Image (cartoon, rainbow, N blue to C red; front, side, top):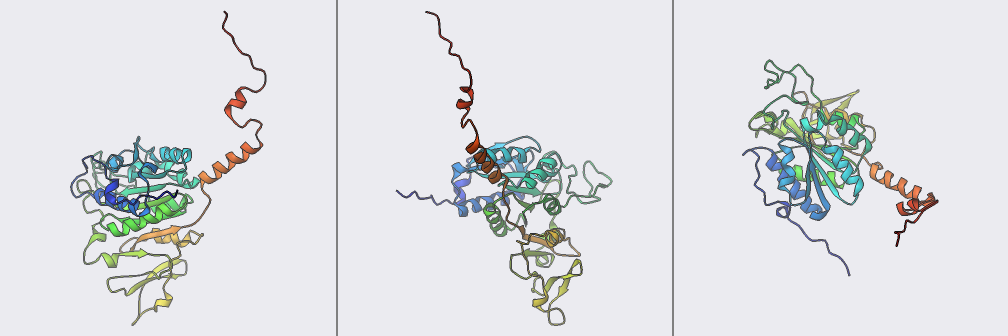
Length: 342
């Protein structure tokens, strides 16, 4: 008898819990996009585990009609790693904020990526600590005035894409909260990737960092300030599709297209599958106003996963092991049977 996979809609992944994010928070749009992605992927709800740390974003598991674990600050990656390794058949989604992932959770973050465990890490980046009321985070821009930096932070921020690729990451993508369609596409691609997929979502905090990504949301200018990268397509952008990116020596350069500029054939074609991370790192690091901010799948490279290697090793050891089970080990050698006196 053929078993049919049920067809789901985004609604099927919504729990009966009241969503307690602030009205207007970018988290709402991210959740909708993830639920839409899960429906397209036809993930059985009983095979999905959503793991979070601490922060506004980390309330996520309560709002999902799946298995979930609201864990402790900075430890979501460690727990998600254990869940996936213990049960490789699960679809594991890790939800973290920029502080939860890259401050207290920074060590777990880079080593999960290095190990290439097959899970999906979604990083909500609002460049602030929202739940704890507005302290600067590892991604807050230099000079940001916050509750803990009243004269402006003197720290240089992490660039999440650079950090991921530097930790030998094989999949990195970026989206922005208001673009649910693009986010859904990216979450689907991340879930299909075998290994650690990291998606940075540029997310607005309406209370403590409102407008942190406003320059990229501007209705009139957003197409001139962002570029959506798609594998195999030229890096062309702009409201009139009249700008592109070329490689000029060892640097990327924004150029004008014809008439009066470069031909489309001169523009770089995006290769997300290139193993060499050089151009991917440059694309991930592009900042406005010198460059458009790159959205889409920036890096998507195949590699063996930690889960595959570990389970293969276990099977190999079991084949040559003297004892195949714990019972065989316990009852090996000299044993005694204790009998109760009559």
